[in-house]
Length: 401
Image (tube, rainbow, N blue to C red; front, side, top):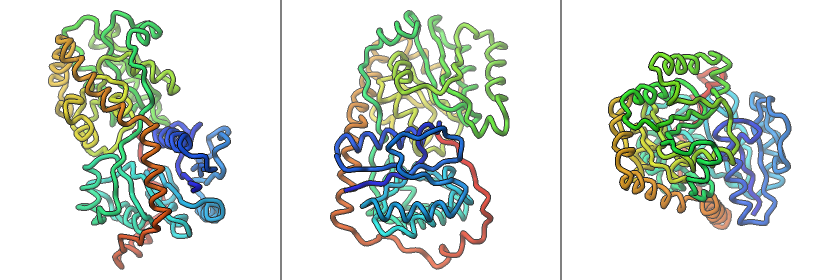
């Protein structure tokens, strides 16, 4: 069984590219077949690795048709990493022209499921389901939304958790390597942007009682944000740190960390914080990695966090509630036994979702589809077929988590 995986791919710096890379290597670990990456490129990448066997020019519709011909000739099944903003056309509609020309079965991993989609977003996901034999999501909430918002039969949907790297859990060694011994390390990593709520975490530090707390904000500003706003948000955050006289308690590391370095920081951290200011996020690689690393997680109750942090794998506080966040930080830093309990619960779950195990689940799922070639379980309403043409093909960018 030869698998074509469509998505962005390193050296592209985005969450989907990282996910696609990790998933590809997890699948190939369990399989000797010649699988391949079909990489979406915006022209900024400098050289893809050997596993990239075909590239699709993001903004050129004809490139998607060329890819369909190539995939039909070389592969047995196609696995699409779907996020609206990584494909060309209005809200990424160009991917549909590829899918409708495939003669092999399709599975799609959905990285975004919207509670209030626009007409075009609704239509694209409905059509994506129509062209697919199977859909994969990362939470049970996403399955419910597909059923109630998009009227997709849940019989064609399965939940496979987000994979995480292997961690050795040697926190002392990680802190020593990073020069963080003696610190209670609080961490947030990922692309920086106004949708991350970092200002809430900074405000909370004014009420944190532990003098050894150190908040590390690791990550570059999202390229799309830099393109339109420069480093304005980072400048605002750094100004807030100065105004609150927290220079000794907050460090910004403006770097897209390698996986090796990221594992070091996650292993070193005591508390991981995702203070996102809105609920509509159905997946998060950063939160998955933090749980996998055995961090005690404190988060706002966005959809993915509510699902992942069940069974005492983390703590939740209200959106934009710096006081509530400070109370939880004080609770954990003041009670080593409770901090350790949350860390152990997270690490235990992370061991169940290692990329090694997730890759095997994907491979088994794809093999089952190829073996049985099921009939499509969703049909398009007549209105769905025409609705996309009502919109222009101006791409709607979405930020990856």
